[in-house]
Amino acid sequence: AGMSSSSALLTGTALGWLWQHGSPRARWAALGGLAVSAAVLAMAAPAAAQNTAAAAASAGVDRIVYLGGLIPAAVLIADALTGQLGANPIQRATLQTGLLTLALLVLSLACTPLRLLTGWTWPARIRKTLGLLAFGYAALHFLIYLLDHSFDLTLMTEDVLERPFITAGFTGLLLLVP
Image 1 (cartoon, rainbow, N blue to C red):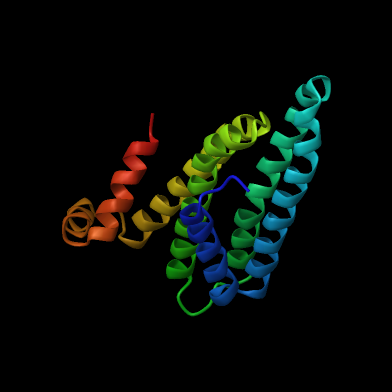
Image 2: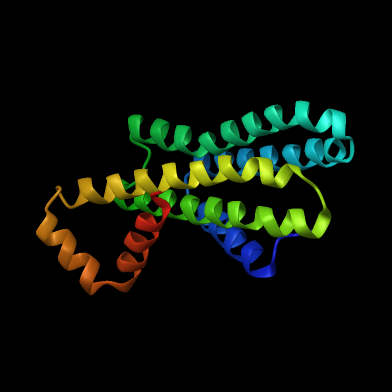
């Protein structure tokens, strides 16, 4: 399809990690997200070919993408409320929200090349929704990080300066803020 091999590899790696390290509920959430994505592709491709149906299908596709993107958050909240996050719940929640952020960001960035390669217009319509979901998961990821560090700004500043992956994540979050 229109997604670059590196984008597909990163998204596949994130979903693979969730499948391997997530709880059974997280696995079902990942499958649900993939099923929703497949439904979006199946519905949007024919609609993009028909100009009259494309506008009507756009609102429905956007809602489906949004609801599909919220499935992992609902599963994470349900797991937290029922105590099923494992031995280190903060680490699991941090890793899952971080990987979901990366996957959604890659998908939102892949929309424009997909539109240019295929001529479909629906990827441009869902790009904003995917980007907003990525920002939401990034904000949740940062909130979990803040809670883990007890809102200690000195400790967080040291962490950002000493650990390159945290520096990259913090910079990425700052770039997502308009």
